[in-house]
Image 1 (tube, one colour):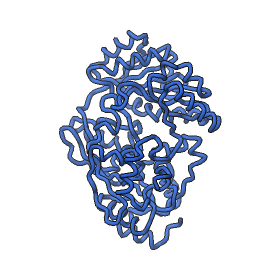
Image 2 (spheres, helix red, strand yellow):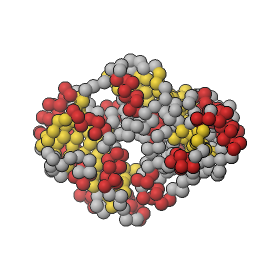
Image 3 (cartoon, one colour):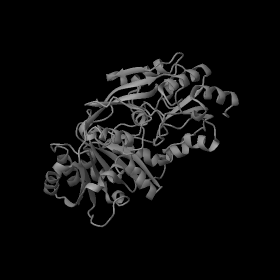
Image 4 (cartoon, helix red, strand yellow):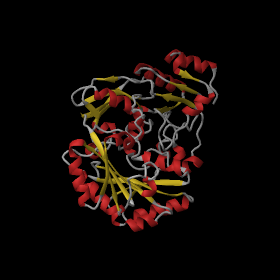
Length: 433
């Protein structure tokens, strides 16, 4: 779909000349994300370069754009910073890309929460909250991600040991705008948010969010080498019960940690890193040594580097060293209890784990099993084998919302906020449209 002068002119009337993008090279960039991390998505996802990019600078402009799209029958692909891994922000139907990064207001910094617009990055939010002695409860490992992008495509992150996942209460309320005949901002909270969280923008565009904050704490990172995954996970589980829970815990096989940790001073088959409140560092050292860990460093300067090497950032760093990898998301005690079988399910297996505590599962670990990419059948058989030995597996090689649960909530929200199926079409499971 090539943008017409008439369409560009009409969009310019809504958001101003600086709010409309028609340059082919920029449109190409706005129509891509990090789905190249998946060999399956790289092959099967058929992105369509948008006809125009639109950057509303206010919620009122966002409302106007979505009302216009409804009237014209234009497909709308919402996006934040484009760091999504699963094709969330890749258009599959000709239309417009709705870039929310200019929605950058931070409002109502209170004692316990903050109201923030969708385009604010977590780095900027952290800086603003720090001036008030606060920090956001949970944030992604990509600190340049926008709030709207993370809530539309993420789940857990830094802080999830203490506060859980996006469904566990630290998202207090959302302001959502639908692609309907007469759109208006709608505030949703409680279970009503379920149809909008992790929905890839298919059930309304998140304009604002009220997020829980916590007291800002001084932190350091404890590094410990272990000779086994079992010992490292035991130690990490004890660290989760420190008086102030760790902001993050990561456990990596050497084949993963050596891609982002300097080798000097670090040894062992498995590396544990724990981002601790400074006052609990010595308790953390004692607990780690008691489970056979060799503490190789406690380093305040490692906080920022650790933030960008946990969760899916560990995948990104590993892939930059070896583009021939594939990943599946794993969870549960069976990872360690059946470690030998887990490692045999896929060729070249290597394990990354993050400590967290979603309400559904409680304190424990989720993570990534990285392996050498062979073909679809090898991956599918490996996933089946993992599930057969009790590992909870999420297959990240899909762009479909609702494929891992929550379908009824997404259906109901889409019916109310996107009756014509114009929001990120092709992303809600086929039976939804």
